[in-house]
Length: 398
Image (cartoon, rainbow, N blue to C red):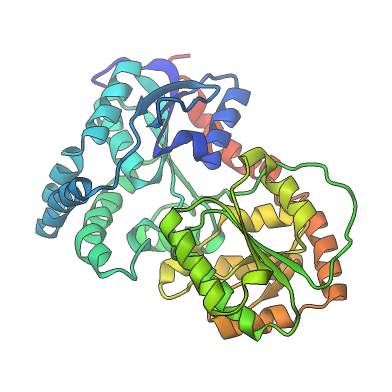
């Protein structure tokens, strides 16, 4: 070891920490183990969390940022050394490593691949332990985009391939994704599966289902979430169900969705609502909807491994669900009997799935969701993560 380690644990993430429920739950779990974590993450000046935080300003995706990204990542075609040089040219990566050097943690929980690279560098200097939690299939994340395949994919592929084997343990969000990662990188063990489940909450034991149905999409209102497909499916619905689109997005994108609704003649049946605070998401869904939907596009392999928070939030709210046939999505919905799965990700298939619902079947799915919510909760999932990381939390000199 080059550096003397301290009895400290660092949680590293290049996400906006105040909005990242998965990382915040990791912090709480480590706190429950009797250790106060140091969080190294992105945050605005007014973001606050109940843990020690060292912050890097939120990224501004302007043209200058995009051009600098291309300049750093494109040379990865030349090989691993070029990829690593490009990675360390980013100021936030050097900053994060400097924060680890100052804190000297004996254990780093690295969220997603950029954090893995930084944590791996710290391990090479100090011998610290690493747990790598990957929230996506990083090498396939946006494989449908030519720009991504040309610039970003070679960059992340080379870096993750080299450094993932430096992690003492690995976890991810779904079973099939875990199997693919083990196969791709020839990992000695299957990554632990820690799903993005919410905290369990007590709800009134009420399965009353409205008819026509109140159908809900909540979460980020952004492209590539199947919202256009959902809107287009409405012209094929057999019943005058209503649709709520609840969440935050750019004014321009939301305006384009409203125009799409108007072109389809569905304005009176669609409501756009602002996002609600994270701790109110499930209760709000439980009282305002009957069915939660997520017809995610499936044009790339990565999409089939999607396990969005909203699926478990819908279930936690006691809603029936309707989803496109992503592999892990389908497995959860069918194994727990909480809803329907479309045959593909088209608007026509989404409409067929919704048209197959009845007031009776939705009530049955809602009852099954209440039952499933007892196990599909963070209280269950955290035990998996705790079993993996607890041996690494022990200070090596204690």
